[in-house]
Structure formats: C-alpha cells, structure tokens
Image (cartoon, rainbow, N blue to C red; front, side, top):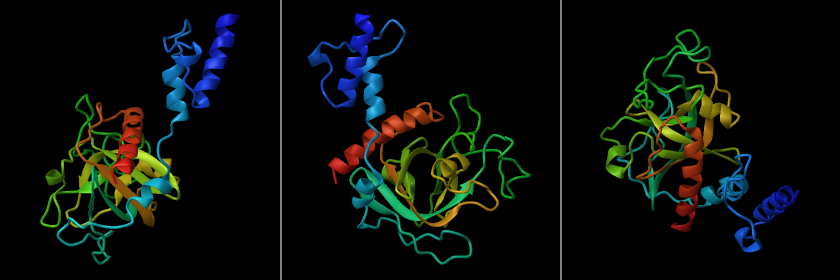
Length: 239
C-alpha cells in the first residue's frame, strides 16, 4: 500500500514540475515496469508551442538562389531561409503517398504514386507514407542544395500548421523547383486532408528543418518527436 500511495504522490510531483527525487521518489523502474520519473516527465513536456516557434521565423535570411514554386502552375515565390541551427520555409502542403504499397497509398489512390522513397527504413524497405510523418525536400539544384546545410535523410522537421506542431523526418526528395510536400501521415496528423489526389492545403504550413540531426531508426515517429522537442527548444534558446 505504501508503494502505491508513494507512486501516486511522485507522479503528482513530477506533473507539478517539482523535483521528485528531492521528496524521496525513486526514478527506478517499479515492479510493474513503470518508470515513474522519466515516463511522466515525457508526458508533461510537450515541447515548444507553435507560437513560440513561429515567433523565431518571422524574418528570412534567404539562402536559396531564388525561390520555389508550390505547384507546377504557380510562380516561384517561396525562399529557403537560414537560422541558427535550422533552415525553414512557409508554403503549402501537397500529399506524398510514395513508398510501400498500402490500402491508402497505391497506384489506384495516387495518380503520381511511386513505390520507392529517397531514404529507406532500417530494414532497407521504402518508408510507409500513411504511417510515418515525413517531409519532402526539393532535390539539389542551382536554386538550393540541402546537402550544403548539414541536412541529410532522417533529419528532424518541425511542421507547423493551424497552431499545431508535428515532428516528422526528412524522408523523400521531390522536384528541383517545387517545395511544400509531406506524407499522408504528416497531413493526417495536422488535420489536413491526406487524400493524395485531392487533399493538402494551399498555404500556411511552416517547415523547420534542424541541421545536423538524424532519427535512428528513421521509421520511429516516437523518436522523431522526442528528439524534435529537444531540438525545437534549443532552436528557441539560440535564436
């Protein structure tokens, strides 16, 4: 009975932001496998808000040699901007359903479907677009080359839309002159219509790509979220 009441008290202390060990609470794993302090701290720490992140990307230090289109029929108007620890842009969101074939992502549901992605899962197979939130970055070109900015496959991306933050990975590359695309799962996670043929949104999506970051394994959205929250806080602190 003491263990149960003590556990409950420790959980309340952690949620309140107090130091559990200082009150005699252990961070060791309990007999039912519950790691009190670390688990509850993760639950309580949701990372920076959308407003906090957007405040840091109000001004653009343009590093792209020109601008990108959001769709084939639009004029180029989207620059890639540089900040301490990240690059960012604000654009639309087209839906990428490429990767492993599923009931929701296949040649019948997506007129532009491809069964491969630029970066693969740890088992060597393509990513799964309707399960993993990932972002598409334009292939290297004279406009901009992500490789010159310490960005590689599996980099963490904070995707902000409608006052929400979703952490994704850099999972695929796209056309050299178009920007603003993410996976079915990324759109779904932000409340955007994920239909690859008719979904997406025309504007209002901000993508912050953290330099020198990497999620391993790339298919772990949980790890992307944990690392993303840490990197987002560092981004705010350093800008």
